[in-house]
Image (cartoon, rainbow, N blue to C red; front, side, top):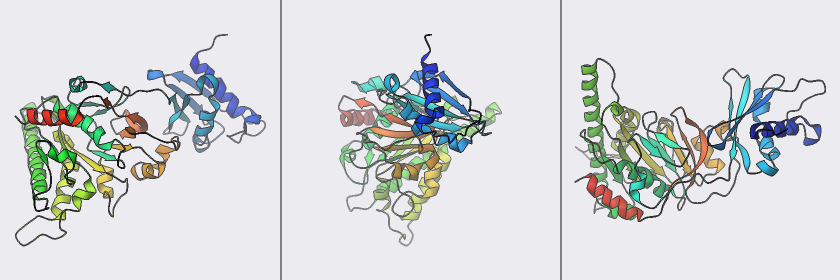
Length: 379
């Protein structure tokens, strides 16, 4: 009889897990009741495979993710397990199975094609987006030539296309390296004497705007008699993008001179306040780092944990484990990634699990359009 795709996957998995010549990956014994398996079709060509923990433990089931991927051969050779989740009550484990070779990336030939239907939505590819109503600031990591800066620019372009709102919306780009971003209009870089006073001032301005927007929201909440959110009105999101956070942080002296607050502690305090308090006013920080390390020479653990959207370009498992819990990366095999490839998660209730994404291909003069939109934004 003709079977559905989901049933074909189900029986392939049953054969691979229950047939002794396949290695008995669940360590089943003679006479033991076989675990129940179901498979259903989901959106975007995905399948949800569920294995119930009737006679085996949830831990044993989670460990067979690589076996399931290898079982899927012939017609399903392009398919593999990408996400595995255990039920809170430890009754079953769900595996998301999808075509890992399919290209879900977006191609834009004109910057205007990137404008989304709402300012609260940042698109990444055909299946993934960032919902700014449910997520917070962003941590973006990736080595040189990984596509990290271009990926961040794709986020900023989408915000710039909406223009400014009536509530002081602001998009601030800080380039401490005086690289290609620094020549664009309204980009903040180091002073002529090599100090970072202009950078600190730009961060203060951003924090002031954040505070004023929150005060305006508080006034609206009093008028309505209920808590009001920035996205309930015509607020547009604000972004503070710090390129190469570690390099930027190294510019500040550890101790301030007399009658001055120009020091590392002031920089750190501003960042912490904006990251932890900004989302409620629609203000977000994008921190870019070359290495996904923490503490000394990297990103403080408190900040890493507070940033709810995490992106790792040209990822490796060792770096990924510094950004996410190791359990979330169990199904991710080591492979060679190309520029623009990334692992992505955002705590918005939809993209909480780490998934593979490729940021948009932009077949136009990216820096030219970024400069033009920055000019128009601040006219």
